[in-house]
Length: 495
Image 1 (cartoon, rainbow, N blue to C red):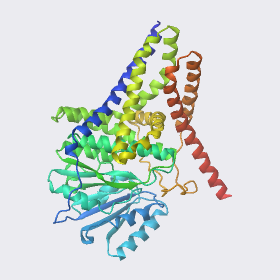
Image 2: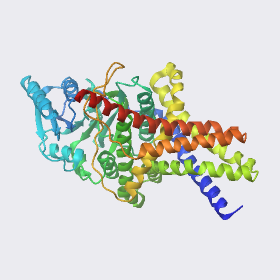
Image 3: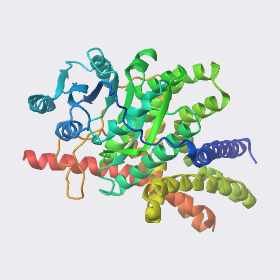
């Protein structure tokens, strides 16, 4: 075996082992979730003495959903005299007019509601939240992004947790108003369900750190100040503040039985933009806070879990590397007659794959109960889309490591809820870059690999090859097709 071949195989197996370790961590999350089920946070009864609450609604060009958001917020069951609503609008389009009119409408109905508009986006969402806090009257702060609907009973079932003076934030679970809209939204719903049910649930029940998700959560205002306030040196200001607050000793509560519905991105480019922001921001937060966490006197289990949490997105560049190495590694082993090597990498592949499958199936069982088996059909797509995102998110990770700055790119929302709703004729769209072309190229690469495997009767590798191929082609082709389709529609309308 030549030194080059040895290096390729060594790097291939090292990458596979690291990814298998990340996969094994999912089993740990499932274990924590069920092992500590007695620590599940239930909705808390509303206290007799109610505090003043400020509801913050950060907006940026949300003309299609702002009315829906405000309507839901004004239906929250809470005394009006104790509820303040802040519309924090950085918009530069018709959203300004729509939001101002809606605010005036609800003010006339007796709501304590203010419209705060900034002429610049300094600090982006974090800057808007911070600006609102400077004039907020509430002892607690409830935050909703524009694509969410506020549950009527969210304060009735959560504010009681703050009677414990050590609780700093309460997060509720996200729901999905357009889960059934398309395959893409079904896949996203499964991914988010796993994150909330098993990651948040597992971490919270086991006493580990978990994070506020930027929306559908309530903060004790003094905690925000104590932790250093909203900072905008990362793209995930929510994750950053969450860790800073918990490092100060504040405890968070996740209430999975209270659900705040939200609109999932229906466009592949919008989905990728959202994932890119989350991945890049998490690595920025990792660089900023993980050294402090490891150097602190926090318990070892918290340090270990924080390390897995904040480094999880490193799996994406490793996935791209693995994708590139799979073909030469297969050729090298076949030419040397190393069929027994399959005994090593196939189990590793299966271990990583089964960890993903069991992780997301468990979350679907928790949500859907006896009908969870109907969700099994989406697992191949969940696996494939997770792989297909690797180029997009690897780009985000590399940008974060290199310190490349980028603006907070909002996720387009179209008020799409049912199958009959259309989005192409609406103004906003996700950005397109070189990533889809790289994804399509990798899709063809795995096509050539499949032909090689079939011609040489290496059939055990085909299921993995096809999952990778579908994932990359789906992500790339959908991005290009939807972008071109939207452009053609706009041109037809202009003509």
